[in-house]
Image (cartoon, rainbow, N blue to C red; front, side, top):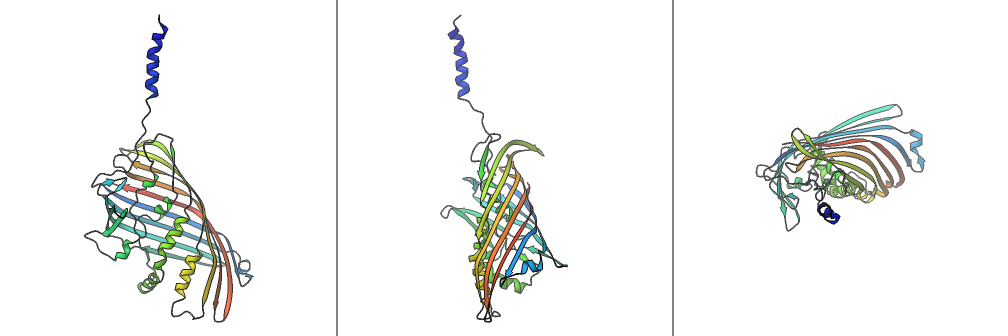
Length: 362
């Protein structure tokens, strides 16, 4: 028998296998025109005071008073419905967002030298019940934002809104196989904490006149504060494809998420600008001055979670994210007024757990 002839089919099979690969899954954003998804973002965090020091005029006030006990907890729930008007280049061509229930609450408990106090504050948003339209503008390479035909409001409410609440940054660039990994920006956490952008939250405990005065004084610093907050989200994000799963009859892609943040930012210029604005008020002495030398904020976060992506509609089905964070502030200030000058130094360190989630319905 000619052994060379026997090797021929084997070689052909080998060549065929060499040119063949297992196709990966396509996990992409792609809702069809008219797709409607209701999204609910929920956030909870709790932090306790770990360390505290205060030096005023060279005296260690913190050592004299002892370390206080402080606990701050916060919860928020943000619901809105998105209707997609087509997709191009991995983003909506048009999106109509109708805001539903918007609520947020902060509770702070404080105890020092046997005295305790607890305060709570509920917040609401004027965007509740309002519908807005995001339309892609090719010239500006950004979305134009306007009130929908059946909604109206102050145009200033539109300035801080953002379109992407679909977590598209977490998706792979192309086809993906099980156990494949890729990087994403941990700034996605800011999108989870502030879904939809700046919703112009208002505290229900502050009288309307005081709220209007507060907004007039400090609203100009919102963009700078948001930028500094985004800068604190510096770190690494790693996504891992876990394959597909069937949930309630839907085939979904499963993506594991890990986030690690270790960053710091200088808030001294922002606080200096705010202080200078506050000193312009009529009831402040003419010779009052505030010099903020340092205002350093550091943030450390470790978190993990899971994104479930609806393959049929090309939109997120759900997301869960949980972890722990540490935040610290070190500030030094010189204040002057009425012919006197005082140096002030303080440091505060707090830590605690947090959870963020997205649930959807169609």
